[in-house]
Amino acid sequence: MGKRDDLIAKYADDLKTKCKMNPDMALLTKVTVGCGPAIYNDDASTLAASQASELETIKTNFLMKKLGLADSPKLMEGINAVIEVYGKSERNKYRAVVYYMLVKQFGRESAYA
Image 1: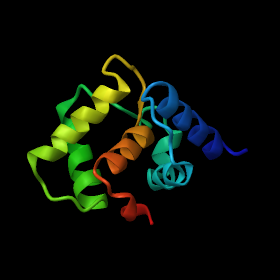
Image 2 (image 1 turned 90 degrees about the vertical axis):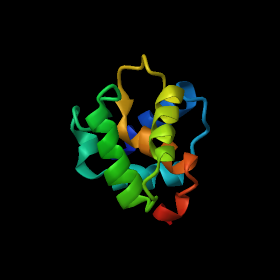
Image 3 (image 1 turned 120 degrees about the vertical axis):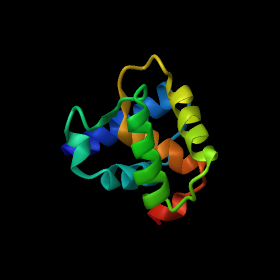
Image 4 (image 1 turned 180 degrees about the horizontal axis):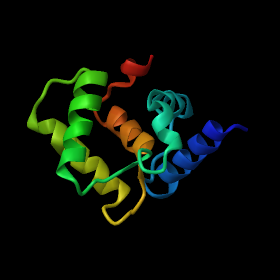
Protein backbone atom coordinates (compact mmCIF):
# COMPACT_ATOMS: atom_id res chain seq x y z
CA MET A 1 0.00 0.00 0.00
CA GLY A 2 1.12 3.55 -0.70
CA LYS A 3 1.21 6.44 1.71
CA ARG A 4 -2.17 7.72 0.52
CA ASP A 5 -3.76 4.30 1.08
CA ASP A 6 -2.31 4.25 4.60
CA LEU A 7 -3.81 7.69 5.29
CA ILE A 8 -7.21 6.66 3.90
CA ALA A 9 -7.15 3.60 6.20
CA LYS A 10 -6.32 5.89 9.15
CA TYR A 11 -9.19 8.25 8.21
CA ALA A 12 -11.59 5.30 7.91
CA ASP A 13 -10.51 4.12 11.36
CA ASP A 14 -11.19 7.61 12.79
CA LEU A 15 -14.66 7.58 11.21
CA LYS A 16 -15.41 4.16 12.71
CA THR A 17 -13.94 4.60 16.19
CA LYS A 18 -14.28 8.31 16.95
CA CYS A 19 -17.30 9.27 14.86
CA LYS A 20 -19.23 5.98 14.99
CA MET A 21 -19.74 6.04 11.21
CA ASN A 22 -19.29 3.26 8.70
CA PRO A 23 -17.44 5.05 5.88
CA ASP A 24 -18.20 4.76 2.19
CA MET A 25 -14.63 3.94 1.15
CA ALA A 26 -15.06 5.09 -2.46
CA LEU A 27 -16.32 8.50 -1.33
CA LEU A 28 -13.68 8.76 1.41
CA THR A 29 -11.00 8.06 -1.20
CA LYS A 30 -12.38 10.76 -3.53
CA VAL A 31 -12.59 13.31 -0.70
CA THR A 32 -9.02 12.46 0.38
CA VAL A 33 -7.70 12.80 -3.18
CA GLY A 34 -9.59 16.11 -3.42
CA CYS A 35 -7.61 17.43 -0.44
CA GLY A 36 -4.50 17.22 -2.60
CA PRO A 37 -1.00 17.36 -1.14
CA ALA A 38 -2.32 18.86 2.13
CA ILE A 39 -2.88 15.33 3.48
CA TYR A 40 0.89 14.74 3.53
CA ASN A 41 1.65 17.86 5.58
CA ASP A 42 1.20 17.40 9.34
CA ASP A 43 -0.07 20.95 9.85
CA ALA A 44 -2.31 21.16 6.78
CA SER A 45 -3.79 17.67 7.21
CA THR A 46 -5.46 18.62 10.49
CA LEU A 47 -7.91 21.38 11.41
CA ALA A 48 -7.70 23.96 14.15
CA ALA A 49 -11.37 23.65 15.03
CA SER A 50 -11.10 26.26 17.77
CA GLN A 51 -10.00 28.98 15.32
CA ALA A 52 -12.88 30.94 13.82
CA SER A 53 -10.75 31.84 10.77
CA GLU A 54 -10.17 28.14 10.01
CA LEU A 55 -13.89 27.38 10.22
CA GLU A 56 -14.65 30.36 7.97
CA THR A 57 -12.14 29.04 5.42
CA ILE A 58 -13.81 25.61 5.46
CA LYS A 59 -17.17 27.28 4.91
CA THR A 60 -15.98 29.46 2.04
CA ASN A 61 -13.49 27.24 0.24
CA PHE A 62 -15.03 23.82 0.79
CA LEU A 63 -18.76 24.13 1.41
CA MET A 64 -19.45 27.06 -0.92
CA LYS A 65 -16.79 26.68 -3.64
CA LYS A 66 -16.29 22.90 -3.79
CA LEU A 67 -19.76 21.68 -2.81
CA GLY A 68 -21.63 24.62 -4.32
CA LEU A 69 -23.73 25.41 -1.25
CA ALA A 70 -25.27 28.85 -0.77
CA ASP A 71 -24.03 30.92 2.16
CA SER A 72 -26.34 30.60 5.16
CA PRO A 73 -26.11 30.09 8.92
CA LYS A 74 -26.78 26.37 8.26
CA LEU A 75 -23.24 26.00 6.90
CA MET A 76 -21.55 27.00 10.16
CA GLU A 77 -24.11 24.95 12.10
CA GLY A 78 -23.14 21.95 9.97
CA ILE A 79 -19.42 22.51 10.56
CA ASN A 80 -19.99 22.78 14.32
CA ALA A 81 -22.16 19.64 14.32
CA VAL A 82 -19.43 17.67 12.53
CA ILE A 83 -16.77 18.89 14.98
CA GLU A 84 -19.07 17.91 17.85
CA VAL A 85 -19.40 14.38 16.42
CA TYR A 86 -15.62 14.12 15.88
CA GLY A 87 -15.14 15.28 19.47
CA LYS A 88 -14.11 18.77 20.51
CA SER A 89 -11.44 17.29 22.77
CA GLU A 90 -9.99 15.23 19.90
CA ARG A 91 -6.66 16.88 19.25
CA ASN A 92 -6.09 15.69 15.68
CA LYS A 93 -9.12 16.37 13.54
CA TYR A 94 -8.13 15.26 10.07
CA ARG A 95 -9.21 17.54 7.24
CA ALA A 96 -10.26 14.63 5.01
CA VAL A 97 -12.45 13.15 7.78
CA VAL A 98 -14.16 16.49 8.49
CA TYR A 99 -14.70 17.11 4.76
CA TYR A 100 -16.11 13.59 4.32
CA MET A 101 -18.57 14.13 7.17
CA LEU A 102 -19.58 17.52 5.73
CA VAL A 103 -20.24 15.93 2.31
CA LYS A 104 -22.46 13.34 4.02
CA GLN A 105 -24.15 15.91 6.28
CA PHE A 106 -25.14 18.15 3.38
CA GLY A 107 -25.93 15.25 1.01
CA ARG A 108 -23.46 16.50 -1.59
CA GLU A 109 -21.91 13.17 -2.63
CA SER A 110 -22.68 14.20 -6.23
CA ALA A 111 -19.82 16.73 -6.02
CA TYR A 112 -17.48 13.71 -6.10
CA ALA A 113 -19.35 11.64 -8.71
